Length: 502
Image 1 (tube, rainbow, N blue to C red):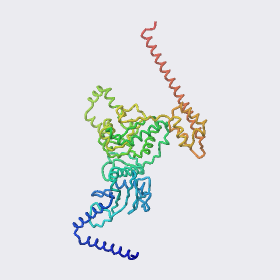
Image 2 (cartoon, rainbow, N blue to C red):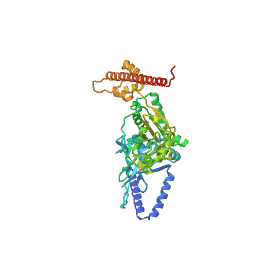
Image 3 (cartoon, rainbow, N blue to C red):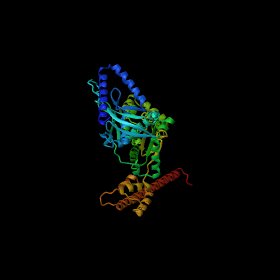
Image 4 (tube, rainbow, N blue to C red):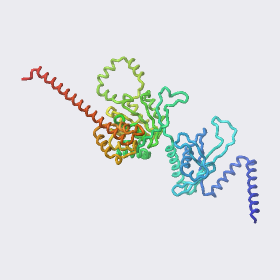
């Protein structure tokens, strides 16, 4: 049999098959076609050792985009799509990567998991429908087909597919553009296109590598955050909401806000900056909490100044009798009017219920951060363990923090200007200055300012601050001595008047 004769027979067979299929589609009743197709698929499945799983792009009556499809697309774009020969480029909104490459239609790539090889096929079907729907259908339906040997069914279903979905979600979170949210005033919550939170792109460049603080404390915080981020199963095992509270306290200018930004960039978490003074009451506070997403940091800065949450319970305990008498003398109508005129009626118990009560678990995987300049003013119930789990003091600038700032701002270390560094080390041990003050003094102000000039500016500032502190201490000592002398003279005069001098 010649080559031409063989191709001629193959062509005849293919033409016959196509003719029979056309007659089958045209003349066989639909219910008979369904039975034939069903048994044909069964025969093919019996003869083939491979299993296929389809993941459609849209699911449900309203054609909502499938989260599984999106996760698979992200996973394949980052891994197996690198080996694909035909790719398509897409612009993804709110992503650090402007253009994302993914598999083109009808492209197949392979992947390997625990020694098992699988195949992914990207495909689409075109719909030809004239029907009208309030939720119009797309003309093209894309889907992924996962193929694997049937002996690995359990491994693929229970291990590989969850692995792909988790990795895809993790990659998406890592590549997404972080957001900074702030709560809107409650009067603007309702109406068309109104929202409880407004957001902008979070672009703060702070990182733990550039944070000016002691290395040991920095490493401790990083380890604590890493443990929390990987603690989903652990928190579920101990029966505790997957959240953690941080209290950042210290003088102004010590880097509390910068610490929050570094935490967000390290964890890839959005930041929700909650302004308590614009929240009307506890109900609105819970509503705002429900609207937050997981993988986020909820921040209340200057908690001691946000609302009068610091001493209410203590005042009630200390002066209950007098307070009751005073309240009883007031006009009840006037009291009600005063309550209505308050800008915010958020109470301490309402805030505690949101950060540690039943409502605290509504989002999951969340960090709650309070900042304050005066930790002693806060109610102990607000900052106890379980609410603020870790207390971090951000104090005045030490020499280790200065070395980080010198590297960040001047690209130098103590080997370049050892003598000047020694002077700075001595002065930092004698005077209290914040990292913000140190950073301002060593920042070059012109192109002619080199590292030596900046360090000398800092030394001059530290010496001036030291002299000022010494003068203030001397003045304080002088006033104290005068006060003690006046007190002693008054006491002696009192003794003489009572006739006790013999």
